[in-house]
Image (tube, rainbow, N blue to C red; front, side):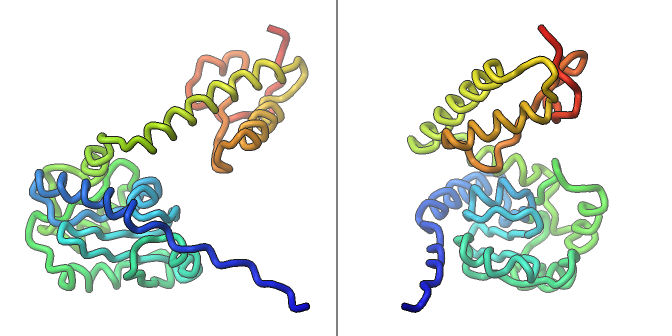
Length: 229
């Protein structure tokens, strides 16, 4: 008998992402923005279904969508993204595409909103260099996406509730498993494993801080030893 090849994952349900994009387009219209340029993985994931830290996505208010992705990521990107027009760049520099897209997308002056919160300074300078007066300076794309996400569906509310329950469960596991002489890293690994087994995503990240570090927020686990109390 011939070995069966693994089934190719189906593309995501486009209707889900189309509804999210429609909400985004309403917010764009409210602020007078024609197009957003996204690079933040969480924003792209929410709006198109794919999780990738190196892609650039243009979403226009008229429904036109273009994704720029590294050649190595192209096959997976095509399977996971709801976008049909996916183009390859072969280095970490998508500037050649930026040159072409300013004209192809028909962008007018003061109409393109870009993200700002997570971009490095040189990345923003690169974008500013190629899009110049086309950039919308009144509001960054980060906030446009956040505003579009304010209204939650019943499914999203249930996922938030489930995530909260998993977080509470993780704290319970941490209290039960913590023992003198154990490192923060070992405890974090045990808690993460228990949470994944209970249904948490594999991207779940655990923060652990002991001793003087316990007062810090978002503290990565270290090899510090836990002490009694």
